[in-house]
Each structure stands twice: as C-alpha cells, then as structure tokens.
Length: 113
Length: 113
Image 1 (tube, rainbow over the protein chains, first blue to last red):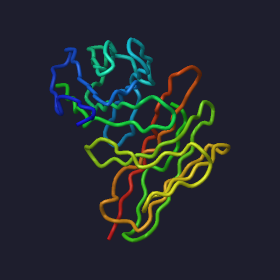
Image 2 (cartoon, rainbow over the protein chains, first blue to last red):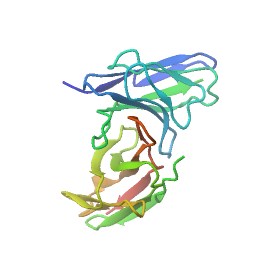
Image 3 (cartoon, chains in turn yellow, red):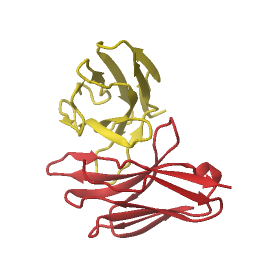
C-alpha cells in the first residue's frame, strides 16, 4: 500500500543529544514537509523540499537540519541547539503541484528529558 | 508567519450548522486547503479551493474569495465526531517551482449534544 510513514511514534531522548526522525513515502511525491505542533497550537513549518537534493527553511528552522538524498526520504534531525524540542512532529508529502493535497504521516511525539 | 487568522475555539450543537472563517495574506497565494485534526492524530484532508466560489462535499463545504483573502469551511448536520481542530492551510508560491504549505493555528470545534 502507498503511504507516508514516520517512525517511531514515540521517542524519548536526553537533553543535549541530537535525534533523527524518520519520514519515508512511497507515493512518488516530489514535495515533502516537516512541521512541529505544540499542545493546542497549529502546525509550524520547519523545512520543506520540492525536489531531491534541495530544501528550504520554513518559519522555525533554527535548531533543526534535514537532508533529501532520495525522493522517498526526508529525515529531520533535532539538534542540541533546539531550545525546546519536546513536541509532536509531523511529516507530509505531496506531488508539489498547486492542486494536490498533502498526505501526513502518523507523527512522532518527541519528549526530551 | 503569513498572517493566517481563524478563530481559536467554537462551540456548536449536534445537528446544527457551523461556519469557520479564515483570512490570509493574498501575496503568493496559490490555493487553500482545509484539514481536520483529532487530538493526537495527523491532519486529514477535507477540501481544496483554488477558484472563487463554493465547493461542496457531502456535509462539508468550503468557500474561497481570492480578492478578499478569505475562506470559510461550512459543516452541516453536525455530529459529535466532528469535534476536532479545523486547520486552514494556504499554499503559497513566492516564485519558482517551490510551493510552501502553511497552516493557521486551527479552530477547535466542540460539538455539544
């Protein structure tokens, strides 16, 4: 079945450690997005990528890094520079065209202790 | 952010009709999505508008006015399961091939018996 997969669903890390969140899609989508959601808040864009080997900063990129070496994969690294990393992280993909919906993964809830 | 405004919370009665408004910046606008999100879950696609007018899809309809930078989501015959957050998401293009999907803070709808 085609879809977008984030793993793991829950992740715990110690403060000061980098952590990488996985996002894989087999929908043959060109565009991929990473969002952060805090309790009671909307989605804030961290990074997005329209094509392989290219990505742009979103509204809250500081303390995060991404790579897009393959079309199917868009991993997000939460670095120790991110001051408040505990949040719900959502990955999405779309064909990239102006009239196509974005499909979301199930999300990863990251807790830093 | 991109000045996406929607009410924070709304309450409505089962069986009634509710309208959730959204305003956004028109510069770079390339279409608008509405998503539904239940607590702790990923957003799911509801509707897409790119031209002015009303798009109807069962109990849900969405309206767009490009010149006014305004959209609304209309939910009819409300059911208890419609209690969720509703996210307004304009697709923006600031030149080139890259589209940027951004979200409002969401409207938390509570449907009461």
